[in-house]
Each structure stands twice: as structure tokens, then as C-alpha cells.
Picture 1 (spheres, rainbow, N blue to C red):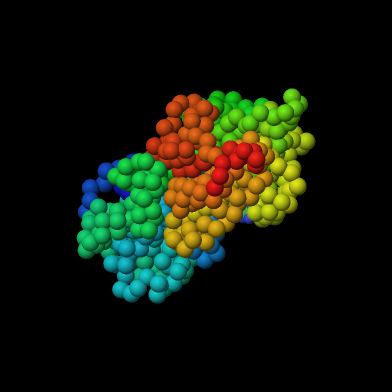
Picture 2 (cartoon, helix red, strand yellow):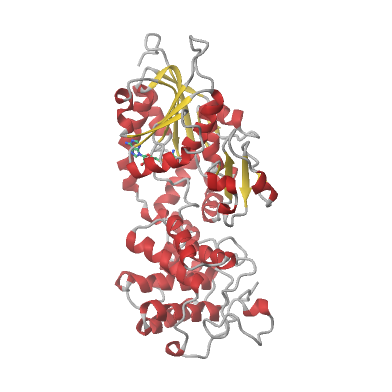
Length: 530
Ligand SMILES: C[S@@+](CC[C@H](N)C(=O)[O-])C[C@H]1O[C@@H](n2cnc3c(N)ncnc32)[C@H](O)[C@@H]1O
């Protein structure tokens, strides 16, 4: 948990109003020294100086602050229903009609508490007189929300405490509010740094200490450190990488080439994306205010995803016999359609066609939606198992992208809960599927054609090892320099290449940690020997 006052996780939303007054729920207030202080901005609060409500918990408000209620509902949906925070949060914000400032507070609180779960639980376990798994799960979520406000947000201690107790009374009843009050008082006795020293003090293992300090599971810290080394970087970059995982990602926009315009976004203050043509970095807010976003010709897409899709579309394919040859492209694992939309637009510009394949029917529907702005004669969506692509499609393609299911360890900053859901067992489970999909992608590629193997994970087991395996097993492919292919479509040199493969990083490139390997399919007769 790197959030400190002033750090990302601890940064208060500008102009926010979630400090509460001297009584929980009293946010409008009068008589405070300044509106800013009264409304919860408390910059550079010296450690140890706490202001407490004099009101007993059971006499305090039952009214839940809507922004904190939204954060609570998100944590409950994630814990109890395995929901994805990034899908639940916007719906809850709309349901409670939060304004922009409250939505910012709810987002920071929910995402921060989800990301920091391991560290918050380590602190809470020192403040609760029983194992945390014996608490009512809803009460545990309330404690996490309170502890996150106390330790990592610029919320005055009395407000964090009173508001969380008020929320507890509103959603869990008066009974648990005394427990929440007592536990959060214990939490508030120390600042984050002191707690981190306390909970890491008796850990002999340096990785375990790093894990608690940066709010990642230890196995992921080990895996990411190993990934840095495997991709030619230094192991001591791990702190910067973990910090980048804990930072709120900027919103990357892509204008579908030939279809979308970023003019509205740029006029509203978005900045041109530094890495890739036709992209912009937006401060967020309601993107639906722009017609291009509503129409789907401007989309939210990580710059790393844009780069790998553009690289697969641009790398030269072998000479084709007929002058009027129209390239056929295949997106083997297309759902929900981010890369398919970009590839479809690029295909339209190049006179190519795109078949977007997806195994899950509801995700295939999302691909159709994403491709809607692209002329319909350019694309087709198929629902089916990509592993059959070599035989079931009855034809071969000039370009195939296999953006395979993976652990997503490269996109942790977007999915705050996912680091606590994943386990090393996922790697073992995904490995065979990733290999089968890459094999099918190669089988479905015409001689001279290009295959792109993509993951949003830098883990060697899902990236370099899969690629080395394929090169060892198959005599009909040769590697293409993926770093050079990325540089060819980027606005500046990325330095992402390592051998023939390429790896982008959040702490270096500001993108998700996308991995790209490119292969050329060799003519069967002239193929290299195994
Ligand atoms: C990493 S996501 C692809 C992301 C997508 N390319 C994009 O840019 O939006 C992997 C996708 O593969 C799909 N999938 C899983 N198993 C599959 C299979 N056997 N064949 C085809 N697709 C599969 C998943 O449902 C998921 O939508």
C-alpha cells in the first residue's frame, strides 16, 4: 500500500467534500474555520493529532454518505458476488446519482480499499480480537473502507471514523457499529508508515515485506520480479512497477482510423497521446458527453493495446501473387472487441476483411457492438472455439492475432480486485489453452502471413516460455522482431524489444504490460526443419 498523503492512493479528490462535519453526515455545515477544512480537506495532517467526535456511536447518524455507500456496495459486490469493480462502480454511481466530485471520492475509496486489501487486513488483524474470517464479511468490508480512509486518504480522522460508523449503522445496524468504532480508533492510533513498520517488522522474507508495503500478494511480487528479469529489465525496478500498479491509470482514447475524431476530446482538454497516432489522454469524467464516444468511433483503449494491434496490422506480409489480393485478417480471441474495433477500422482502410472470433456468446455480442461503426462488409463475428480455427474456418488468413486469455498481471491497475483473485494455479490452467490457441492461430495463417501472439501479462510462463515452446515444436514459423514492429507504429522509440519479442511496462511506458510476439508462417515446402 504505497498510498500516503499526497501519493496516488492517498490523494484526495479535488474540491471533494467527504470529510464530514464534527458529526457524521453533517457535510454542509456552518461555523467551521473554513469551508475547505470543514469539508474534509486536511492536507499535511501531523501524525498523532486526531480530532474525535464526542458523540457515542449509537447516537450518531444513521444516514450513509452516498459516496461511501457506493464504495461499500462495490466492495460487497466484489466480495460476495465475484463482481468486477470496474463494471459495478459506474452502475452504482449512476444509481445514487453522484455528482462528479462524489463519484471521484467513491472511485478513489472503492478502488483504493480493493487494491490495498492485503495490507489493510494485516493492519486490521492487529486491531480485531478474533481472526478476520470470523467477522461478518460486510463488517469486514466496512472496516477496510474506514481503515483506507484513515491511512491513505486525506480525510480527517474524525470524519473517516464517524462516517464509517454512520454507514455501518445504516447498512448493518447498530450492533456492529460499536465494533467498527472501537477497531477504527485502534487503527487511527498510528499512521500508515508506522503500521507498515509494525506489520512487516517480524517478516524475514524481503518479498513478503515488499508485498505488504505495495499491497500485492507475495506470489505476484515474485512473478513480476521474475518477469522483469526475463524481459531484460532490472529486478530492482519492482518497486516502481508495483507503484505504477497502484496508480490510477489515465484514460486512453483511440479514434478509430478513418472513422473517429478526437477533436471534441482535445477541445475539452484531453492531450494527444505521446505513444501512438490517433490517441489521446483524457482526465476522465463522463466520456458519454462526446458524440464520437456514444457512436463508438472514439473508444477507451490502453495505448499498449493500440500499439500491438497496429503492429500486427502493419508488419509486412509475404508477397501475394495477385495484384488485387485483399488481405483476410483473423482476431482469434476477440471479446470484448477493443482490438477488433481498431483492426476493423484499419482493415477497412487497407481493403482487407476481418473475422473476429470469440468463444463466449455474450462477449461475441460485445465484439459486434464494438465493430458497429466499421462498415459491415469489412467484418464478421463468429462465436466459436478458437482452438478449431485451423480446421473449422475452411480458409487461411494473412494476419492472425491471438490475444489469448491470460492472468492479466499486466493490467492490475485497471482491475483493483484482480490481484487478490488470481492464484499461481491460474498459470497452470491457462498454459495449455494459450499453447493450443497459438497453434490454431499458426494453422489458420497462410504461408507468408503473420501471427501476433499477445497477452496483457508479462509473466514468462504466459509469454516467452509459450513462444519458445512454439518455436521448438513447429517447423513452419520463424520469429519477427516485435520490438521493431512496435517502434514502426509508435510515435517514439519504445525500447520494448528483448530478443524477438517485446514487452511494454506500466512504469516505463505508462501502458498496461502488454506482451507481443510476431511470427511469419513459412511456406510448408520450404519450412525449416524441426
Ligand atoms: C484477453 S481477452 C481478448 C481481448 C480482446 N482481444 C480485446 O482487445 O478486447 C481473451 C478472450 O478470449 C476468449 N476466449 C477464451 N477461450 C477462448 C477460446 N477457446 N477460443 C476463443 N476465444 C476464447 C475470452 O472469452 C476472452 O474474451
